Length: 107
Image (tube, rainbow, N blue to C red; front, side, top):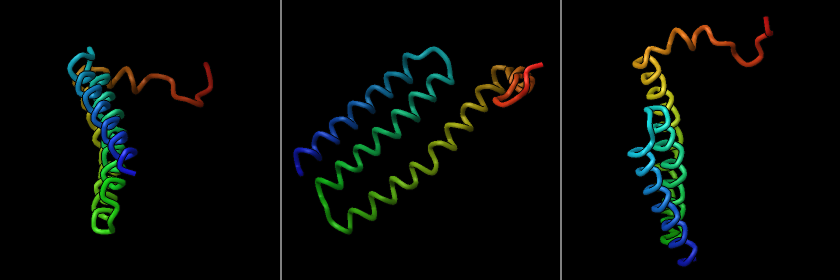
């Protein structure tokens, strides 16, 4: 179990580095927030699962599960709000309001 835990924590740490690099290198706000939230969520989940495998006790299980639940509940909402703020800041809100939506009939 220890080897699997170390591998999961190592993968999570590598993904966090990749996410941080994406935040620095990507060109616009939407791409940067995508890198931060998608890769960051997966990376933190891997680290937490690895931590549980490293110390498989009930005391740690509920703490790590609670952390994971809060991350899964809050990161998508934060990502959505950041993307919305970037669209409004860029002045694209009016263009997006008039854009066709999935399921709309072509005119």
